[in-house]
Length: 392
Image (cartoon, rainbow, N blue to C red; front, side, top):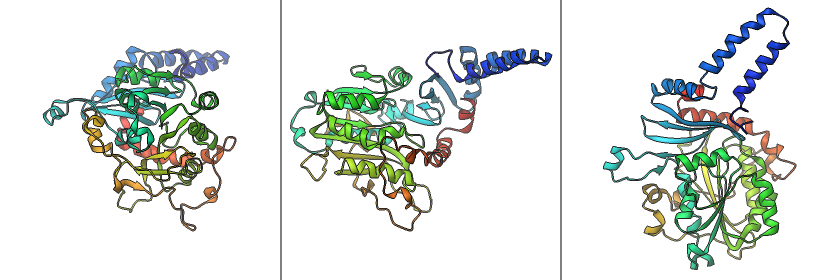
């Protein structure tokens, strides 16, 4: 699905309806013809410039527009713009992969002259460069980085700007295309457009110890690819790190869910030396849900260091960015104990408190994903209004 412009879910709907009509012996099947024409010419879900224009006429009444959209191998990918609030986001099905504030006259008056990330977490990931170790003595132009999962490309573009030789592994070619065209992903990188699982497995065997930095930032929010959080996959990333290397992992989830405990426990089993930070202040505590973006900074499992410290950022680290000045350096008040304590008898304790996520056992995580997806869906409908989701 999504491998070509024709092979998409809307065409499948039309093909199924047309097929059933052809098999029917009733003359009523002739009524299918006008229905198919309506779908092809008037349905905003069906691809085509005519339907795209009709869709935008509807959305623009609510302050939104679709700049581009395509079916792809991971889902329905689109670039949305809020003309009212002045930002663009990259969407994959029911999640947002990232976004940027546009440079509006109001922001220019405040001294902001470049597009900034909507989400703090992507600036936080760049703090992988701030971890103090032996590699700190080498210049960035002597270092290499591996990024698993692209999004809109905020972190890899920053690494490239610092002169770091950067490799990006992204399974979805449309995500890479839209990140380049609409979010200014720097083209000076090695793009590996394939499934990260076999690629990491092969690279860990063929070229271990290749990277100073690894950023693991994959699609999460109730539908994360479980194979990218297994002991085996994370161990492969550990093998790809140099002895003084650092990995940063972004995980968006509800801290109250057992699936989150499972993933964090698995990470801890592979990377015992980590520090974890949330992207915002803790809530008031009166909500059962605590859905947050978390960033974990971890050392290579064989590292002799037992403590992670961060150097103070200098002017060059900010790349003339307001968002990085605010969010690059990890904030002590945002640190979360790692691994988080799990109290028996609480809602956070269940039968998944002991197992680790392994190949062949990803169903342990997947069985919890429906609940996480429902919570995430509610959050997404607060970020982007229902009319946008319903009209694509």
